[in-house]
Amino acid sequence: MALFAVHKLHHSYDGQKVLAVDAWQAAQGEHWLLLGPSGSGKTTLLHALAGILRPAGGSIVVAEQDLAALSPSALDHFRGRHIGIVLQRLHLIPSLSVIDNLLLAQYLAGLPQDRQRVEEVLAGLDLGEKARAQPHELSFGQAQRVAVARAVVNRPRLLLADEPTSNLDDARCLQVLELLQAQAQACNATLVIATHDQRIKTRVARQFELGAAA
Image 1 (spheres, rainbow, N blue to C red):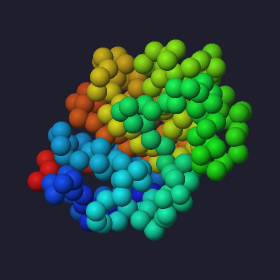
Image 2: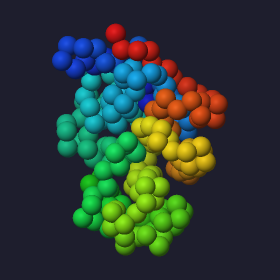
Image 3: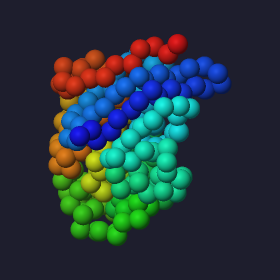
Image 4: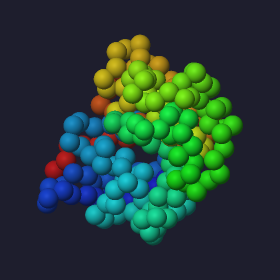
């Protein structure tokens, strides 16, 4: 059974088509690269899968739930419980410590605040000593790992990452890819990485490619 299914999806900004997808689906636990040139709609599609953006037309079903059928508040709760996302801009809350950023993710999803789970995830990402640090005290690599930790703390069924390797050197690029794959595997999450980074194309077998926007 598909974990997510996209059908006849399209979206436009100011009358300009930025996304058109006839059909795409992925099973639970599969790892995918979402490929395409700049302007092909990779980020738009990722945001639609996450329920951050409501597309102009078509359907998206995630974990047997039609996202269009949910109210904004119900969609927020659904996303928090079932979808983890690592955006290009990490969006950590600067006034909160690392551990409180993760506890907030549980709270916003309507889940019990499970400090043991948070500490377990941070330890698994080599961030245990940074639990009480503020985001501005972290290196970029540490902040990115915190963003991954926040994305997986609620054991999502779908894990999305937007261009996570594009600004990294070769060694760090591979580390981040392996980190995302390992964390997805630990949750048995379906992983989708939107990228134009040619260095990782040979390392993920399943690929969905978008053409340039019309």
